Image (tube, rainbow, N blue to C red; front, side, top):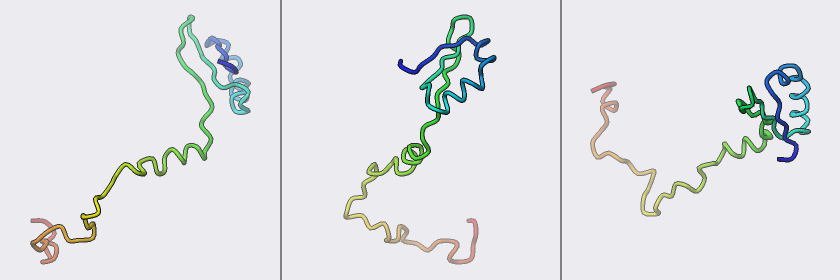
Length: 90
């Protein structure tokens, strides 16, 4: 992968702040950290804030459809609620 780098844990420990700065400036897209030749972590920059908000808000949009014959404002119970009579729990 372009702009990717693999470093061992010792090198990462020694150059951590520099690597974090390069990730922050988007000079590196990801850093793979290895220990004894085995990848143990992948460091990537966070998604842009706007992308995070867009992904979070409205992610269920269009997934729920209410048929037109259903009136969501109509009462759902035929009998009175206990709270209408001053009772909190029944």
